[in-house]
Image 1 (cartoon, rainbow, N blue to C red):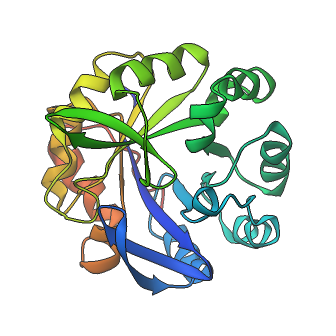
Image 2: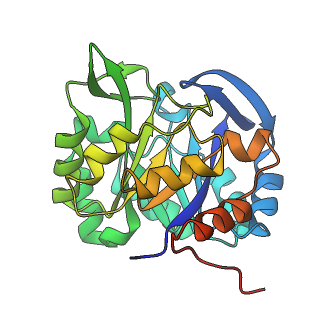
Amino acid sequence: MLKVRVIPTLLWKDFGLVKGVSFDSWRRVGPVLPAIKVYNSREVDELILVDIMASRKGNSPDQDSLNDFADECFVPLTVGGGITSLSQIVSLLHSGADKISLNSALFDNPNLVNEAAYQFGVQCIVASIDVRRLDDRFICLSHSGTRISQCEPVAWAKELADRGAGEILLTSIDRDGTMQGYDLELIEIVASAINIPVIASGGAGNYQHMIDAVKQAGASAVAAASIFHFTEQTPSGAKSAMSAAGIPVRQSLR
């Protein structure tokens, strides 16, 4: 079994980081650069940085800010938000991003995954899927949860995997920010349907939630924000708990 990754998520809105509940009621949690510097020293495997307003407003990625962020980030960095073209991906990779997260643009142009995976490699492309339960079924949303699509997550994940996505970032909007645990049913039905890694996101409130996402639902990685922003729990603590539960994780070399 590959080592399971612990990945803090940084949600960037305008001039700083925020965290909300179910993609709403955003609460400011501080500037971006100090958070990146803290996580550099906290044994995280990767960081995910998403501009949550870019797709809503139709903005392109803020290249200048991302240059600054990447200069200070010494762990693999996934960047998302407002990315709609290969030229933007090229610019972000040149700025220091290691992976690119694509979401809203794919509903209009799913072939962007094929093109990006062909040009940059599947390991570079993360397909992000945001999901709600509506009328007793799962449905995918775009533009930071503001637009309902006609896609359901299993079929959409299969299509994106077939098109060349290297992994899926799967977020439960209903669980986001609640700290009540990941949606294990959602993770399991997607992870069991595809043969690329699934990053579980939305709902982590303690280490056991992360263990359950991996051991019960089949996640290959766990992403989280609130647990690290608002509690004393840490990425290294998460790794220790997961290791004690028999989950292989990357241990500190220090």
